[in-house]
Length: 189
Image 1 (cartoon, rainbow, N blue to C red):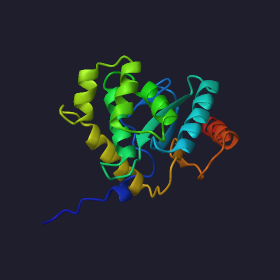
Image 2: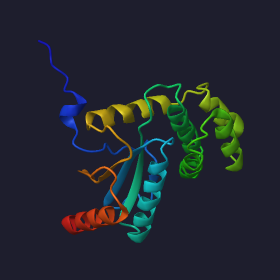
Image 3: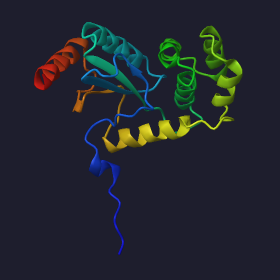
Image 4: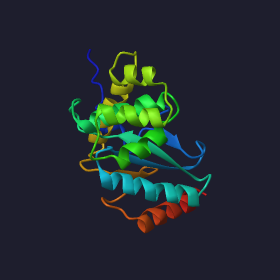
């Protein structure tokens, strides 16, 4: 007798919370704002800045979770930047690397990744080995899992934002996002 394995699209209705994902803010906060994004998207960086402001306004109640959603072509700059972010995460500097990658969204290449890593005072030998895939590093598996998850959720554009499991409309603005957080807080409190 064969058992059919359910498809990811049949079992998820929102972002999968995972310890592998970078979290900014109080990890016990009741509200998670998840952003599916890639570093070659200037608007994504601007949106993340708005989300950070909201997280600060609701300190202790909102955390931010990053999910990679680059091009699935591993040779593209957006995918390589996602790897650079994960390599910085291995050294506790994901969010600092994230800020720099968004700042340099139109100049994402290995030389720039190494320059940023030096500015962040990362262990360059370790970072370079991670970037080149020489280490037993799960970065590619995590990124690919994020892409599969985003596809299962029907995400087609970036940034794509969820407040807990509530999908926000495309190009959501600061005020709309803040109101969604307030509604969600009222719902759960």
